[in-house]
Image (cartoon, rainbow over all chains, first blue to last red; front, side, top):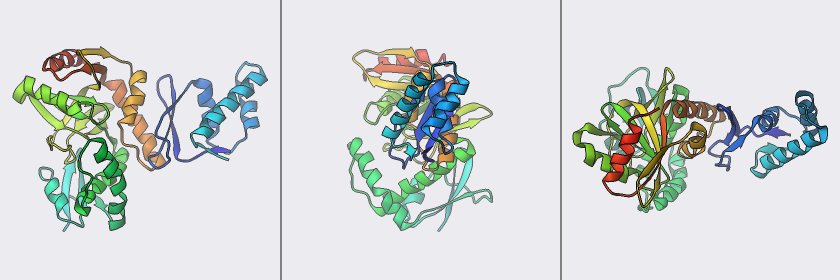
Length: 86
Length: 245
């Protein structure tokens, strides 16, 4: 899976911002904290949910099942706005 | 017959299908320049503009009848706005007025009272207040500083000037019974500012737009104003916003 190319990110001072081009159908803005931003950035190249969990587990000190739950939640959110190319 | 216009410091060579647009751009016509950016539109692109034009006009309570010549004016604007982020410029929806050489931009959804509020500023300041653009100014970032630019596309009352003015403050307008203003943070303002920013269809240009908008919100004073239509509303907004950042 991958973030669709119409979805664009930007790092503001403390927030990770995701928006979509005028023709993508999503006119809102997703504001993410550091870890959600980490997940979205990883989706810029072809990956899997499992692989993102592995990468986060290597980076952050948290139980793997907590990380897996977070990753799943973020991906579902992205899916709901049409941002994921399966 | 092609003609040239200058806005935001850039020259565009426009190749129209209809005569109406040249008259619309009066005041911005300039001599031919080698550096001009070409803008031409096809009849298909003009027709594709119709749906968006109708919904925007309906939101503002204006006539939803558009001739192809009117749609061409909107299509050319869109094409220019699409290219602007490559030149450090983006299109912003708001009413922009200059006082003492500083630009103040009021933004809100259509119908909230942006133009009504800048009309109060003109009443307050007389000739000291110069309209830059009553509806869709271009914001130019140069050396990390934001500037507000006039353009022919300046709203239904055709209020604006061919000038480029340093941006002092941006204000989000809400209707209120009384007039109150407060400073807001860049992170609070950013999603609202983005709503009123033109979103290019090209991802790379959209990314540039976000970065330019970020610079604008970091550099300008940012405010939220609740206001009515009394002249006192202009006193309240000016007293706060002249302080800027």
